[in-house]
Length: 495
Image (cartoon, rainbow, N blue to C red; front, side, top):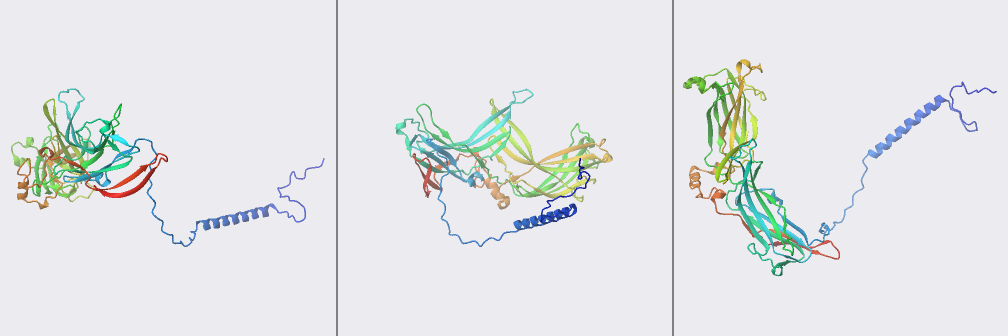
């Protein structure tokens, strides 16, 4: 038996022993593989650099101007008799706030595919006010709310077909709408009357102004009436100043609550607000000095003793702009009224002479001066069931000096002061005392016409009419053999 010579031999690379072949040792073979791998890596890196390098674009040749594309309607084919019925109001009208004297414009678009007998196409403009009142007869733990609605106005106009008062249902005498698209422009003139602002507060009140169109088509067995989605418009009255601008001074003592831990400590607030009444969005300069003094119950009749300092410190002071709503209504023959307060925004004041951001004060008097920026959407109004005013709330925390570092034994209390905040939407700079007296001499209707009256004191209502503005009218044709929309022409028409 021949022994296996390869049994204990070291690993070698054997190649063919034919002429032209070379036997490479394992060490040289590993070196050559390493060199080949490095070469391949270098070549791949070169290829990546060439691919990432920006390619030189050939010079662009001047292209001939192309004719503008023809307008093609992208609506899907339909076999319905009424293919389109909508209310078209420009975005500049829907997205802007309307004021007394403005004009609302839009158009009603209806497209039919075959001759259609219809009674009318009408437009409705509704102003509605709703308030929620608690029912006094309900004595349960869960108080029930009763909603009371009031229509400020409801105007309706027939834009096409029979008049609103006509109830003729005879199809032989109805008008026929030809196939194609009919666009009816309209305009609504808002009178110089202060309608309440558009507002919505859950379970408190709601004021809204809606526009919608109606297409009335009586049928044999049932009516084929169609109504467009209701468009919500935002309205805002003109809040004129009731007095000249002056400094509103604050000098008031805030008494503690009877069950408060600091029942013998009161807070004296001195200072003022400049440039009131202020417009929405203005900066109001404030200056406040707040100190802790003895309460009236602790000092008795001695007013001088009441101004003496007590071992308490005013640590934090906050100012908050508050919206106050007064709702009124009749429930089962009795008139009820309720009020709601809503915080709009608040700011914590920095004491004078302290580092900004360090609101704790160790001085005897908390003094602060700065500017308060009012929101831009403030608008007071008054209506038959709803009134909105604004207030400024001043809150301050009072703590015991002897235990400022001990949170367990510290005696703290919060004192609150409400002061009216006179806001208007018309600048009071151009008003004089004689002008204001003349404007508000008569409660029902002002003499000079400066301030528009409230809606419940004026007899004017919005007026709707056809036309009143330029609109692009499109004429389209329906081809029953090739169901697609073909736009023939566009022209500008002034109705």
